[in-house]
Length: 365
Image 1 (cartoon, rainbow, N blue to C red):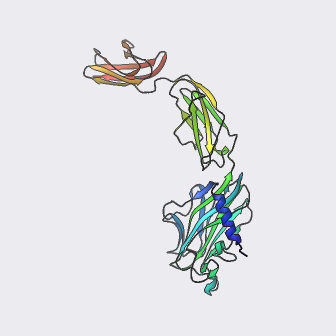
Image 2: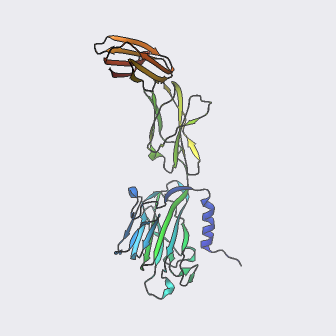
Image 3: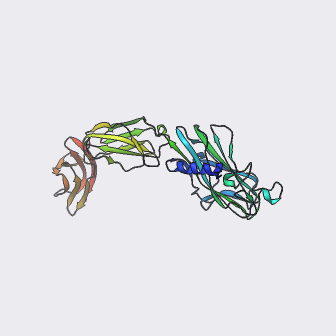
């Protein structure tokens, strides 16, 4: 009778799950050669038996164990899996050289690549005899290819583990090799799962002068891959998405015109599935011309140019307060020349109605 091994059955089940899961955590080791730890405690490593010429570090985009002798390890930090089902750990394990294994008749000098996981500070659990390329007590070992102990190694495999449900998990890989030509490589460590997106996060919007200040708390969005903010002046119109990186939890938006604006926050998973907040409406009423006025001297004149949506009043006075010119730049692309003003220091004041926009000093030569 045809039978499927438990390991093969596990692989079939896991591959089916991977099609619908989101990435919770990932390390691809795209780091500088010589790196031995990740940023902000993402991962650590140690080689207590390395001597000159040995290494346990990032090399050419992979984490590499070269002739580490008795024992060395790589270990992730705690990874939040709260609210996630069907969690799967995958990693790429490769090797070069001739690693010794159980069939080498070399006593305890056995090389191995062992994968462990730990859930909620529980015991470390070993992924044992992966794909028949290991043995009892080891995930992968030298001289073992699909259960046959000979002078061959696994070369490359993608190992998969399925931790139990919990709030957090961490991963550990232990290496042993002891020859100059022996290297083991770790790459693409990934944790996947079906994680429920949070549904009721805090999201506030308030007017601040001529801008809308948008705030949210990133810590309330566990398991979220990306954010985006949409605004809309017409509730029945097309949403306009704002181009920015929203990981900080704060974003100032400058609507193009006064009026009532609706904002909503959307958050999504790695597969592009989004949930959105209720719309928050605010009224912006203090938008004025936001472009600067350019003042410069041309021949015997002072030139003013401005691109604006509203008429702009320009007033020129000397330092005693005597007004020499008061005129208006109409909306749009405008330019005027103030002539007949003698050399000296002048105060230029620009306003829109009773709303002051800009004041500057200008010397006319």
